[in-house]
Image (cartoon, rainbow, N blue to C red; front, side, top):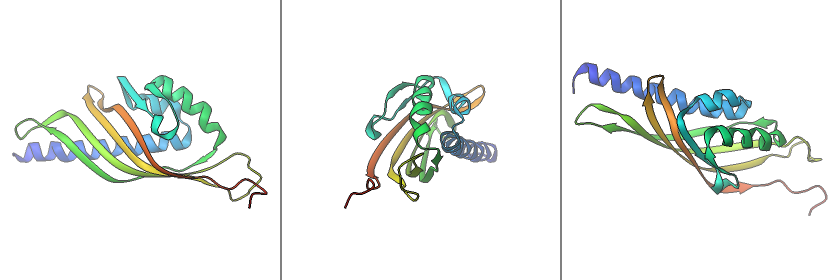
Length: 156
């Protein structure tokens, strides 16, 4: 592998890391235009394992915008990122996959509990494609592994 190829691979890794971080920030901040821009033209998202929907990224963004209004405070933590860039005989290809764990605390708008926090955790599977505009998400699959819901007021 030449130094030029190694540098290109490092740059790809940095660009992909920025894309995954941008995904978390867009969801947490409710920036749905930014969310849509992260995806390729045929990009899809699948949130069914977390009780959501699956479909084209633009439609899923609309669903997220409506659903997440119930949780005005959100904070995705995406960690343990494992990245595999397509290898074309020692040269990086135009496809990549990332598996990453997530922890997602969310505070509901109204619950009667000042300190109520919904928590969920699981794993993302991101499929990426290199486009003329840089790396984009081809697909996102959420695999929720656990969920913690606060007790309702008066529950014992």
